[in-house]
Length: 416
Ligand SMILES: Nc1ncnc2c1ncn2[C@@H]1O[C@H](COP(=O)(O)OP(=O)(O)OP(=O)(O)O)[C@@H](O)[C@H]1O
Ligand SMILES: [Mg+2]
Image (tube, rainbow, N blue to C red; front, side, top):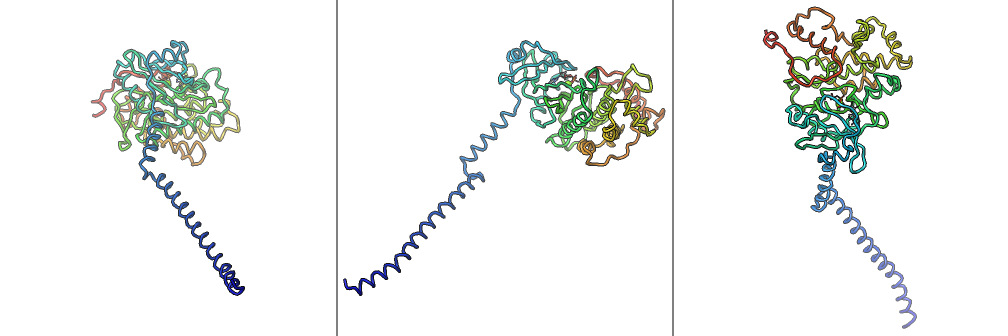
């Protein structure tokens, strides 16, 4: 090759080769990009659920999650083993006794054995309501139902165990000063949130019917959990009320409409919550027959002091510290709103939560006990006669729940 042609070849190679190399690099680059683009598209496809394998996986997981949330069915034999033959009683109520136990997975549980199995119609009603409702409801301030047992001779509900027992222990009796008022205030907020959830956030509204300190349980960290949906009845959200056929609730906490053949709504829980607030302020039972007539019914005493602008004096008498004064005054005003005689005048529980937390102003309450203080209320005169009898008797019986017969009310006289 002549030197001239050698030069031509070298210049050709030096000019063409880089272009060739660049083309190869570009082709490689494009391939990599296409590959990269294809991969996210696949992931997107999986994520959007268009891939049938992925749908099955998601569905399976979802069903498993549901399955694990469902209350477990126990046999009576398993319950006997779990409770060590029912040797550790936690307490008893209107429907049966509660025992401490240990589940097979080692978790501590509370087993509520319903008296007399489920032969009785009312028991069956309670059992079905509890399993059906609590099993589906999950909230930080509600006691979880872990399982149930239905056999010929045994009907029981298995709940998560609340190591600090029920609120009544901290309000009444020797232990009643062991919780700081701030803690009690936190307990009222948590309790109100639990009830608000039942009323306003569940797919189907749940009315508790039996809000009282015995049904507010406290966990390891003293967080409140509302227990016992035993008296709860599912109530369609569209319906604003249901009509009760028998008496429910506990005297002293039950709203007046529960004692009468009138429409009952979720506002009956608001009433009971108001009564609970008074007991928290006073750290005493609302009704105490051992006290003088002017002091024996605490809510009325609080109203009289509030009306005469002497509430601070009463708060002092209750042993509440000066720093908690504003909080207690707020709680008293909220309690008056909650126990208004007419259900529609009582606030929703979500509003109660906001008022308790201080994020909402509290309207000035009107006297909720007017009907008890006045002799004659012309608008509902005949019913009033019955109401006053029932309300007074409700104040006198504070120990047990009313679980049986309907009130003896003369319907004809009410209608006339
Ligand atoms: N999950 C639980 N964990 C710990 N203690 C519990 C639990 N459930 C109930 N208890 C205790 O057992 C006691 C009795 O409960 P039970 O529900 O039978 O009766 P009650 O709440 O007094 O009345 P009611 O029958 O009207 O609800 C409660 O007061 C409480 O101290
Ligand atoms: Mg209870």
